[in-house]
Image 1 (spheres, rainbow, N blue to C red):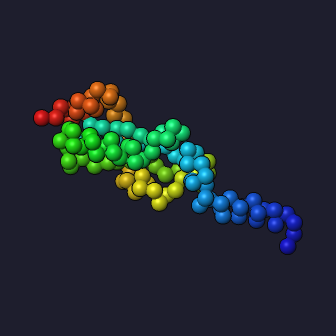
Image 2 (image 1 turned 135 degrees about the horizontal axis):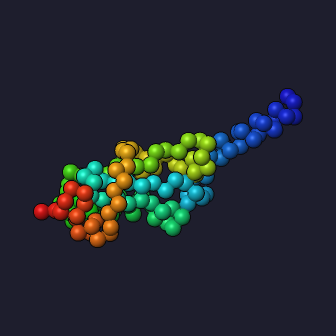
Image 3 (image 1 turned 90 degrees about the horizontal axis):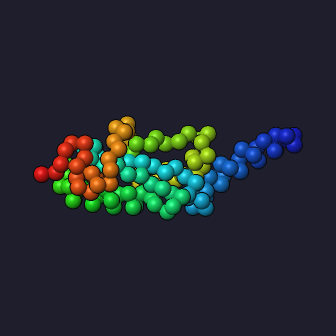
Length: 127
């Protein structure tokens, strides 16, 4: 086998073989995902570089559902999975629960923290 082919195979095979380890090595380099509620009354997102992950976001969403009495609201992911050409793709673990949340187009909801806290989402105040 020619030397150039060995080099090409090494350059291609090494990153692919290391890919399963990368999300554990540097999770902050993965994709920070944004989420919204199906009732348009809540939005939030991960900030992986600051340690805020899906567990934090989902806990806040569950709190929103209880506080605002919206038990039928569903969590929606507004960020699509990156392509293998994106650097973050190599650091994402697609078995994580955040990637199982259904994708929906962002409604570009920009609510203040007070609006979310007081349940004054896009559909009006809670009863």
